[in-house]
Every structure is written in C-alpha cells, then in structure tokens.
Length: 237
Picture 1 (cartoon, one colour):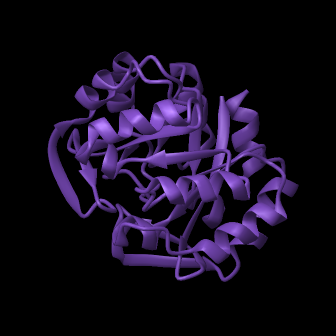
Picture 2 (cartoon, rainbow, N blue to C red; picture 1 turned 30 degrees about the vertical axis):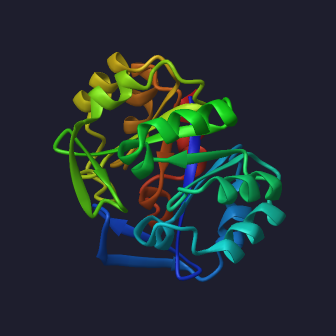
C-alpha cells in the first residue's frame, strides 16, 4: 500500500482544515516546497497536493507553490482542488504533475469528465468526497444528491489512475478512518482505491493495508506527530 503525505495549500502556506471547514484552519508551515522536500527526505515516494483556495474558487490559485514543489522533489505528485479546465490540466502536466484529481466537475458534468479521462488515460484520479454517504462538491461546501458508491460504480469503466475516497466527517479529526464506508467503496470500484480522512495511528494504516486499499493519504497525524512517516511506511508494508 502506498503512503501519500498530504500537503494542503492555502494562501501559499501549508495548512490543515478540520472536516473541510475553512474556519477551522491550522497553519503548519509557510513554505509548501520545504514541506515536500522534508517528506521525500524521510522516505515519501509520492505526494498528495491540494489547492484549497482553488477548490473553493473553482480554479487553481496557488500556481507558485505548486511549481516550487515540482522543482524541489523528484517523486510523483498528484494535485486536486479547482481543476476544472482542460488548459489548466495541460499546464500541470507540462510542469510535471503526475496525476490530477477531479471531483466537483466529475459530478456536475459527467460527459466532460469522461472526455477528460479518455484524453488523459490513467492520469486522472476521481476524487469522491462524502458527507453521510453523499458526494460533496465545491471544496466540500455543497452536498449533492448523488451517493458516493453510485458515482464510483457509474464511472468504473473509465481509464482512471485511481479513486481517492475521503470521508469528510473524519478528515483532520485524528479519530480513525471510517472503515465501513471504505469497505463499501472497495466493493463499488474496480480501480485502485486511495483512502483519505482520519488516519491517526500506525494501527489505522495497518488496518487499511489489510483491507486491500491501494493507497492511504495521511495529513494532520504527520504534522502533529501522532504518526511518523517512517511508522506509516512500515505499517503499509
């Protein structure tokens, strides 16, 4: 199982939100590129980047920070948050992003999302963020009428790189993942599943690995010291 350390960017800084609430922000660093470098030096083999401003505004907002990270590290990086235009995707791939994560527009415009996946086969990750089992969009500010597992099943025929599934209630809370919802999502998808939200301890990582998920995104636990990257990597194996 892969470990994806998370670097969430807002206003050019490294932050974490609790349950996606922009009013519950904690700053963990002023330089995202330095955070990326530290993770790679400690053994990270891939990084999960999120443009929080972009997720809310509907377009990528932290270009400088993203470019600085890509110049600083030589591991695959995937980016989500506000990626809703083909031109932005092309620029990101030119800069060196390995994979892009699309959530909101996949729900709002399924035909467009299907075209994008065919245009960039195995470079697009479907981001499914769920609140009480329903898909949330626009930086988690809105909740749709689409059930998360239904969306995953409906798009399982696409040449996706992976599916990232986040349970919003657990995200940033250090209370452990929602294992039942992750198991339900595993049953709904054929593509590799990356679990996100709530990882707090080495045992959480071990349990996710035992379930058979392809990857695990870890954020606040790494920044607050509840879990070291070395412990997470060991548990993943």
